[in-house]
Image 1 (tube, rainbow, N blue to C red):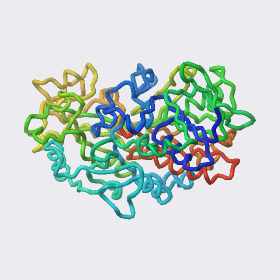
Image 2: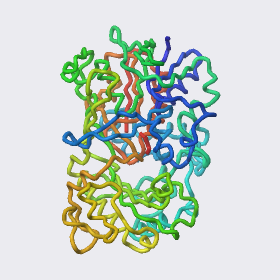
Image 3: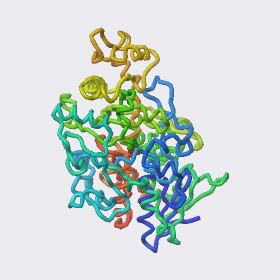
Image 4: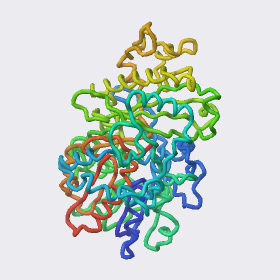
Amino acid sequence: MHATHLVIGGGSAGCVMAARLSEEPGNNVVLVEAGADHAPDSVPDDIRDTYSGSALMNPNYFWKQLKVRRNADAAPVYYEQGRVLGGGSSVNGQVALRGAPEDYDHWNAIGAKGWDWNSVAPYFRRLETDLDFTDQLHGAHGPITVRRMPMEQWDDFTLSVTKVWNELGYQLRPDMNGEFGEGYSPLPLSNDGGARRSTAVGYLDAAARRRPHLRILGETQVRRILFANGRATGAEVRRAGGIETITADNVVLSAGALHTPWLLMLSGIGPGAHLRQHGIDVLLDRPGVGGNLMDHPAIHISGYLPPVARHKMVLRRNYTYLRWSSGLAGVPAADMVMMAVCRSAWHAVGVRIGTLSSYIGRSYSTGEVRLNSPDPDDEPYVNFDWLSDQRDLDRMVNAFRRMASILHRDPVPRYMSNLFASKFLAACARCWTEESPQRHSDECGGDDDGFVGEPAPDSVRQSNQRFAAVGGIARQSRDVGTACARQRAVRLACVLHVPDGRSGGRGDGGGPGRKGRWGGESVHRRCVGDAGGVAHQHEHPDDHDR
C-alpha cells in the first residue's frame, strides 16, 4: 500500500490532517488509527453522549496496558489515553478552551516562530462554529460546534459556588475564549446540545469519507517509522493479525503526547545512549525526545448532593470554570483553575456526588517518556514526576485550602455536605470520616481547629492525580522544541511532520485537544505550502480535554 501522505494516529490532530490533506484530489491519504473507526452514522451512544463520563468509563476506548508513574519510585498506575478514532476528542470532557494569548506569544518568543497568538487565532476560528458568539474572535463555519450552558440552566450547587467566587472578587466573564484574565465563565463545550462533536465526526464526516483518495485504517497499530537515505518512507504496522508495510511520500506523526516520542525512539530518533541500551540503531541522536513531559495535576474534594441540590434535572456535567491566580512569586497570573462538578460519575451514585476540583494551569514539574523495551508491542515507560517542582507542590497545597474554605462558606454547605477527598491515601482515610468530615487528622497535616489546616505536602503529592479534563501536555524538550521552531526538528527526515498539540515552551490553562485541532489545521497549511527539503515539527500543549 502506498500513500502520498501517511497520517499516523487518528486523534484530535490526525483527523484534521487527514481531512484537510484529502481535500486535494492529487493526494492519496492513508490515516492509521490503533483503535476502532466508528463512522459518523454508527458512533456508539456513550461517545455521542454530551456527558463525558459515559465514554470515560468504557475501557474499549483506551490503551489497556498503558501505565504511568507519579515519580520514579512510585508503582505504575493505569492511565487513560484515547485509543479510538478521534482520540481524546471522542472520550474527553468536550472542553473547548483555547488557552491564553500570552502562552502562544511566549512560545513565539523562545523560538517557535509563527505560533504567536495573532498567527494561531485564525485556525481557532477556522475549526469552529460558535453558537453563542459571532464576532471576529469566533468562527461561524467550522466543523466543530462550540456552545455554552446559560447560567439559568446551572444546578444549585454550581450556583452556590459561583456566589462565593463573586464574594471573593472574581467576576463573571461571558466568553472565556475571548477574555483571558481571572474570573469565571460558562464552559465552552464541543457539542451541539445533542451529541459530542469530535474531530472524527466533524472532520471525517460522510462527505469526507466518500473521497476515493482517503483511506482510514482502524485497529491498525504502527510499530515503527521506516527511513531510507535520510527520508521517512513509511511505516511498519500490525493489522488484522499480520505485519504490513505502508510506504509514503510524506509521513505525518500525530500519535499523542506519549506514543509520539515512543515511536520516534523505536524508529531510531531520540537519546542515543538510551536507544543503544535497547539495541536500536541510532538514526538521529536527539537527547530531548521524550523529555520535559508536562501535565496538569489536580486535586479534588467531593461531597453528597442532597435532594435540594438535585431538583434541576440537568445534572449532566460541569458548567463553569474559574481562572484564578496563586500569587506565587514569579508565576504568571491566572495560573490556576477551579471547577465545580455537579455530577461526578455516570451512575446513580455519581448523580448524588458533587466535586470541587483545582488544577495547575501552568505547571513546572517535568517528567519523561522512555522505552521499556525495543518491542513495539510493549508500552512506553512514562514518569510524570508530578509536583517535583516546589512551585507546583506549594500551589496544590494552597488550592486544597482554598477549596476547603469555599466549601464551608454559605450557601455551599446547603447544597453539598459530608465532604471527602476524591483521591486519597489509605492513611488519609481517617481524615474524612462521616462523623467528622470537616477535620484533618494529624497524620494528614491537619489540626484540631477545623478543616482548613495545612495539609501535609507528602499527602498532597501522593494523593494528587492527573487531571483528565486537561490531559497530558508533553514538551518534547528544549532540544526538539527549539529545533521545531526552526522548522528542522527531525532533520534526518525531510518529509516527517509532527502536528501533535502536545508540546511547547510551557503548559497553559487551555485544553490540549483543542490545540491539537488547530495544530492539525496549521500544519496542514504548512505541509501544503512546503516547497520541500525541510521537516516541520510544530508542537505545543490535548484531551485530551478531559
